[in-house]
Amino acid sequence: MSPPLVSVCIPLYNSGLYIREAIESVLAQTLTDWELIITDDGSTDGSEEIVSSYSDPRIRYLLNPERLGAEGNWNRCVNEGRGIYRKLLCHDDRLHSDCLARQVAVFEQPGKESVSLVTAARRIISPEGKTILTRRWKSCDQQISSCDAIRQIVRSGTNLIGEPGSALFRASDWSALNGFSARYPYVIDLDFWFQLLKRGDCFYLAEPLCDFRVSAQSWSFQLAKKQSGQFTGLIYETARGDGSGVSTFDCFAGSCKAKAGALLRHLIYRRVCNIRKEPQR
Image: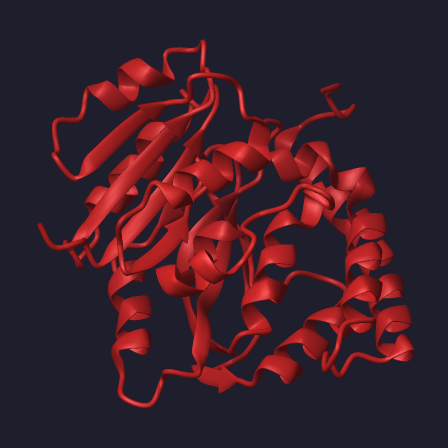
């Protein structure tokens, strides 16, 4: 049996509130040559029953034999994929119907061998699924060189690539890298994007192709107070790497913007989610 074109990978843990929306967004894709891998890290809220209600043979549900934590579950989920391309989708986020088709089309174009990462604009949505804002990096579709992409991200003070569902990457690049690392939990995705960008360019699609949900259950919400420190640690580490093209001034500017952005996002998330105090983990 030939491998599917795309593996969409959803790491699951107590995701009953939103997992159906995530699955439905994959089922609605205009590109149909995909598989959906769902790895469950020991849910106790009925998530398994929701997933089991789907009979589509392209959906594969795997229960971890023991708790792996976020990092381990993310990595197992992507490793279980058989597709030529891989996308990690968080359980409370959604893909737009043409997301896979648009992103795969970039990789399949002649002359795009130097591209290691395809990403897109995304909508930030409320717990109820209403659009709060659209986050864009560029105003039009374009290829961005590896060094330029890394430097622009560092100076911006934020993750311009986006959350995991925003990006598509090659299985061959995944196999050559170390996967997701929780040494910087809030920027676990950006840490991996930097790994990919050291192997090739980024191609950006200016049309929103996915939704990132802000909610009390979002992992990033839980870690909002730590985000700027972790971003700063990652960018200074990246600057010390060979050939990054990132200067100390770039890192200083990015660190200042990260602190301001963290405060603003925390206030917005708190207001949108109607939460007065960050829940304890």
